[in-house]
Amino acid sequence: MTALLSMQDVRKQFPNGTVALAGVDLDVQPGSVHGLVGANGAGKSTLIKILAGALTPTGGSVAWQGEPVTWRTPADAQTSGVATIYQHIPLAPTLSVLENVFLARRGWRRKPRELEGELAALSARLGYAVDPYALVGDLAIGARQMVAILQALAQQARLVVMDEPTASLSQGERQVVFDAVRRLSADGTAFLYVSHFLDEVLDLTDRVTVLRDGRVVADAPTAEFDEDRLVRAIVGKDLLRATREPSPEPSDGEPPLLEVERLASPGRLNDISFTVRPGEIIGVAGLLGSGRSELLHALFGADPDATGSVRVAGRTVGRSPGSAMDCGMALVPEDRTRQGLFADFEIWRNVTITSLPDLATLRRTVPDRERERDRAREAIAKLGIKAQGPESVVSELSGGNAQKVVFAKWLFSGARVFLLDEPTSGIDVGAKADIVELVQGLAAEGAAVVVADSEFEELLGVASRVLVLRRGRIVAERRAADTSEHELVLLASGRNDKEVNGVRA
Image 1 (tube, rainbow, N blue to C red):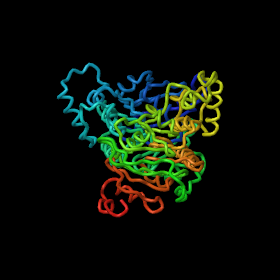
Image 2: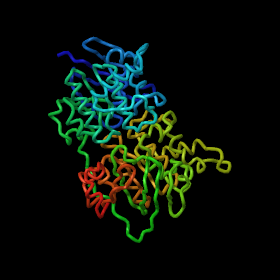
Image 3: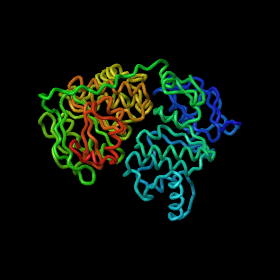
Image 4: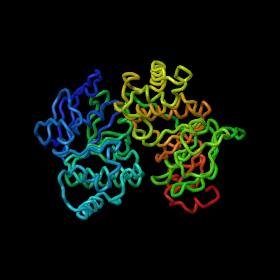
């Protein structure tokens, strides 16, 4: 059978000398679901951009349906029948769902009512309903991901490239994606499925290709892999698994560092109260729409409608991020590209943005750029950020290294309370272990840490206590040592209401 896509000895070297791909072979068959995995920096993003027409290779060849091709623009790839869904969901936030889904169509003059019908049919195929006239910018990140999938379906692509498609989705929405992929592949649509969720790759794909350092180090039918073999191929050695022991609980006599009392926000949060002591890591478990992100943003002073009180070491946090920072709070947001980074700036500008007065001269008013670069070099070394140096632009970094930059900007800010929203979302197993170690290190140094995560197994591996959030309200609290992922799912989904309403809820 002729491969739908065939890449032979594809290479990519950037002008700065970085070799992203060092001779990659990849064949994708019609109607197959082909997994692509690798650590951050392995070359996955570069390969995807070549397939999408956003980059041209510096060597090798690409064949599409048996014919050699050179895609010089994304429009070339789309016209050929390749749709790419990027991890960071490049939709137009000021346009409606309907306009985004059919954005790639040029010159269409059909009436909105007709397009509504087509969108309804696509939604039925996907198993996900959405308001056609909702502004994409107003949607949660999980809903935006679903709109991007609908957009790809509207292009009637022969090959759909999915870059971490479920990183920000709830378990229920992930299942919708899996079902859609299986249905569409059965009808002849091929998928290149890129994910750091190895269980997804093993369950969903027909074949897996593993990249490491810009080369293919494994390529075989999925049935020949298990999770251990995949991990060994990705990192080049057996990954020493963390003990996954929950963080130790501070002594009862330790006064709270973070105190939250009756925090509420119309339509978002309802009567939230809890405390966190120095050295303690508290988990917030909740499904998509539970209010996880809204809670952390309200704690950080970013919700002007919030009521109640938030105190750090007895000092009241005002209704602004500036006040939160002055009180010693730090926020690592879920959407790091839009909210956590200046993606077009260099690493050094991002790392020092929260501590400019400390690095300035003339009475802390004029930034000293060399001191800023030195600070960035220190952060690169301390966090193991893989980059050419402090002058590297953040948008050129892999997901895990970009996330480390988000952390780095807070490490020198004097923060004592860290609010982390999906801190390991969209990064590979090696970078995930680095982030977990970093979070545990912050607690060991006396910080109070609040981690919101839809991956309950991750919470149980790092937190000493877990708060379960549903519909903007804390419905249960559990010691990590006394609960399980299964119980947290039941509590978060409301399928265990009898227990939720019991003594411990």
